[in-house]
Length: 382
Ligand SMILES: *Cc1c(COP(=O)(O)O)cnc(C)c1O
Image 1: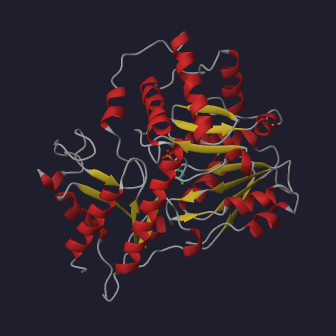
Image 2: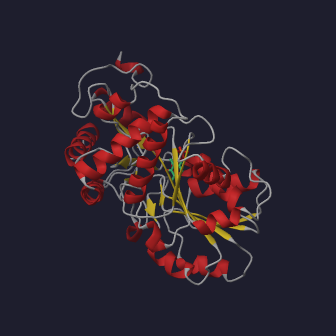
Image 3: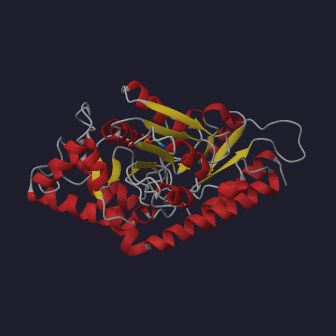
């Protein structure tokens, strides 16, 4: 029943994985390989066992490698948003400056507000980055003791200039710097310690190419020390509680974690480090990004400011060159579904004005060629 592919997908073999019916070019969840899907069916262990400690230590060591950090790794059984909320609540003692360049920056601000965390939002025009000047201007007021920055804004396709922002942050050593790298980490290189990021957050279902369900944070001692000054940190997402518990219980977690995802994360990290190689993974993402942008330039227009393009997804103006009307992304996706593929529609305010092609996780150049030539074919662009 092709008409109902989104909830009743046909099961047959594809290039990437036998159990996957639709090849996902959406910015999460991304395609999960068969080998990793198999890890999810491993038998349970006690989360209070030596095996659990060893598993979680290995995950922590390997996440430190791919995130280029010596900071403490904290996991939470939630999607990435859980630790974003936990970070702004646990580490803001005075007032947070939230830099927003789209939907996910706005969400971080909403998390602050709904948790009673004092915060101000500094927005950029859609398609534009957070500039180092904006950060400097806000912090020079002395009002803020925490900032949040989106590394890769999945709604606009902008990758923020975190290297330049890092230079400004050197002037403000007491400010805790939180970065949302949910849709970029492990696909686009972020040198956490070199940049001086205090809380770097990602989740499993994007460039890590795992099912959704775990949030990952790399947390600095400075961020940890800050939590002592914050009275109401909540409990489940309290970074201090997580940190202390791991210390005391040899990498074990406060509550029962999703062990199946931990088995999968452990295997995927070993695949990334030992089989593909982290630098090769970044290079593959870069190549897919360059290809997709060049294709978009030929037939459409890349939506964001070209100086700040994401390496894990391309947001494209839904207006084909030389045509009068916008394409219908919904209709395009129906036609792509006939070919067992799916791309992303625009997000939030950009819903009908743009479409999004993710090139993250386990996708390859062949996949990018397949989806882009299918779009040309379906829309009769050539
Ligand atoms: C997907 C995404 C999130 C939310 O992550 P969840 O794991 O869905 O909670 C946050 N920020 C960005 C930039 C994202 O792309």
